[in-house]
Image (cartoon, rainbow, N blue to C red; front, top):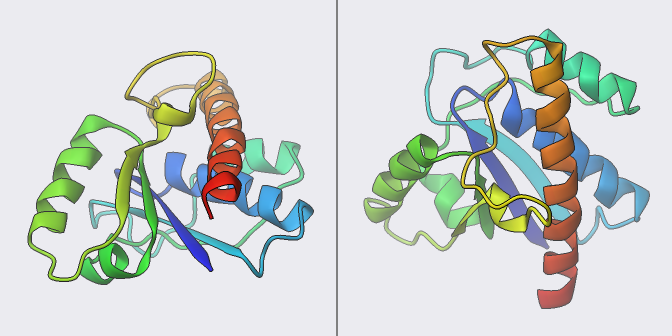
Length: 157
């Protein structure tokens, strides 16, 4: 089984949105026995909270519903997940530092936007401090990146 982890700052906006989008894709394609996904953050201030209501609303508009509580990335994640998809450079720096201290780390650390077929950037914009249109833009970016990520996984596994 291929295990995919999406990582952002607090695990209430970008990474759970990516998790929901990707989970729907693998469920719709009947791949849940081959691919597993989860999400996490690098900060602990949101741990235990539901995804941001605006993120949940955007996902619901796309018929994506799932239960998730924010959590912080662990060393075990870096040992157990095949891929960690990272939303921005701050998250990347934290995870690379944790990775260097983790004995047995095996995850491939990849910027999420590497899979964006339209726009080259290292950053999936964090919509937290904006309005609903920011969540819509982030959803669109994550959706097209998740499509290409799934193609990549299916082609390489």
